[in-house]
Image (cartoon, rainbow, N blue to C red; front, top):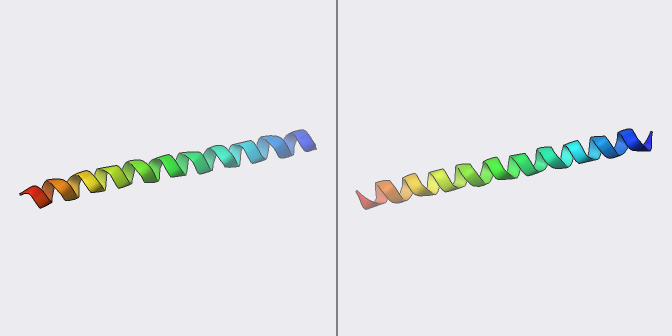
Length: 40
């Protein structure tokens, strides 16, 4: 049972990491576009 629990927790941690990476990428893209439009 503990093994299944560990797998589940590791998967959820991976999902959280993926979500943070996606958020960071979106933030960078929005920041880049904002600077691009700001320069025009």
